[in-house]
Image 1 (cartoon, helix red, strand yellow):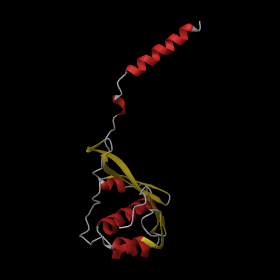
Image 2 (cartoon, one colour):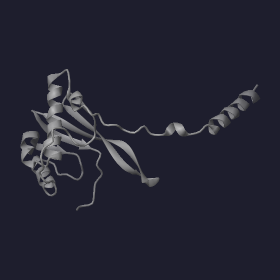
Image 3 (cartoon, one colour):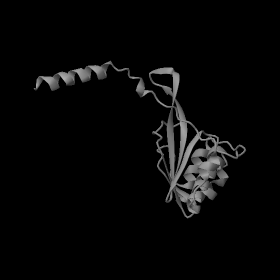
Image 4 (tube, one colour):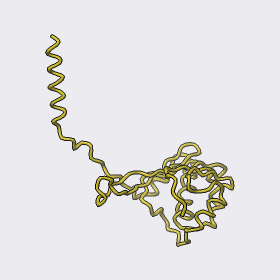
Length: 168
């Protein structure tokens, strides 16, 4: 009796090893073209929080309109990205070194996948393209997340997955 299960186990293992491994291919991350759909929420507070973060991203981050930071960021803004100082003044000083004001677009330009709001948190999810480490000539997509905490109608805190970079 013990021989039969052992034989079946070896047979099953051989069959599994013989199967092609094509099921591991990635499905590319795709942006959502309808930003109004992403901004919608049944709860008015969640919709307002989404809009606050969305407009901050368009006007201050992408548009380089750092003079508008006061409208969006709390003075005591907490930054969890290891490359950017905490505080609204620190944010403005840091991005002022390389952000150049440009016309504000009506939509976020970066490929936006989703806007998620829950309580006082808003998450922007973006398509991120990167070089394949196995073949630098190839690209793949992944997802980048920025999370914001809203307090008293302003962004009070920010998180993302940025690793620490060498000083410029």
